[in-house]
Length: 170
Image (tube, rainbow, N blue to C red):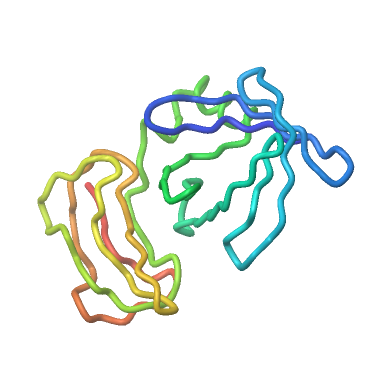
């Protein structure tokens, strides 16, 4: 059994996942559903939820617990935490929604296609701050909180390696 706290668009969801034979029993805020997965690629799967089929793609930015999930062409940004850890963070006043990372590092090697912010600029949570091309795919890197840009360490056309500093926040 796995227990998660998932945040999306300012809402929190209590999710419990239990393996049940060749499928999963997923309980979302007390509502139980049967889910089956079959992989159709590196980050793509087909998900069967209570007999309804959905193509799903899950992508990580590589530097925090956020995921960009695409279901039926609709993109949703999720923040996924272990439930107990999330509760401890809340109790300590240290939840992810209160403190953004001060640095964004390259989640993968690639080429910087666009830099959409500059030093001193205020950015909003979820705002695209730069775009990296990796393996012929464009990857939008977004801010995880409302912050002020301290330093932009890359420029358009620059190659980056995984872990290279991209942007620092104040």
